[in-house]
Length: 367
Ligand code: GDP
Image 1: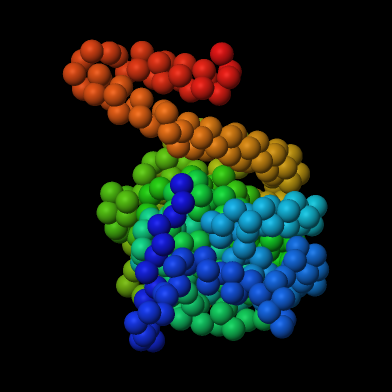
Image 2: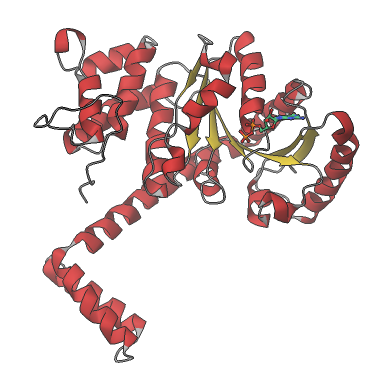
């Protein structure tokens, strides 16, 4: 469905009669121009990415995020070209409620990693809303050291959209960053509650950040998310909070022991850290590294990546089918009528679905 043009907030006054930029994406087009206003082509972008040119990497990501169909075509060709050069990084998902200390932790761990030669890309998933606009840009002030670190690349979450759309764009950004030589990728969940599954489906290690003494309910952490975690860190284990944090560690370890052994073959470990004091950071990373070496040895690392790739394919098919179906003009009309029939108990939901599908297949010559 075509996107509605968004009104641009601007400090500049526009004279009457001067057209406002109609779409966010127009801006992207301008930003896509190369030197001397020559539009960039796929080869320029590809060569730029492979040589680690961050400006061209940013432009490629903007292209992948654009809703314009010509941009999408270019982006897909570029991503195909980059794919053979991707896959060599360690992909880490970082989740936890707002305020748990994700940005502070990423800054602490990230700068430690880059000082040891890692090339780190920090991405975010936030499909929630307008809050997402520049959420990591906002974080940039919090991740001050990383933002100016030549070995780090911070990219804000793609602007709000469906979870599937945002997840796909984030995934494409991972491929582009890996082709640009980033060997460590952090994907942070910024939204609460819905984006964890999406992040989980694209990372090698899923880290859950918790606080001591806040109670699971308070932290909004569902059992399902605990089960997804490959490791837990209890942050803010400092000052008067340290004792509580130690207690919480044993509680979480006990809780994790009640879950069946995960398919990785490793029970998630619980670590303590203070992101602000930068203590426990190295230890947290060691746990991630240990997990990855263990799962590389037992084959789980690779089989999980393959499974993730399959799931991405199925998700894409489902998304496309759903889109095609619900955007079909005849189906839209019929849907209104059928919904009325359901409301007035003239037809069951199953029969209604069957009628709609039969009509869709008939319209598309499948029956
Ligand atoms: P996010 O919303 O999860 O990204 O959390 P932030 O990193 O923005 O941190 C939220 C607040 O907690 C900020 O005021 C941080 O300074 C503070 N904070 C983060 N880590 C720690 C920590 O280890 N100890 C303490 N005492 N405060 C922390």
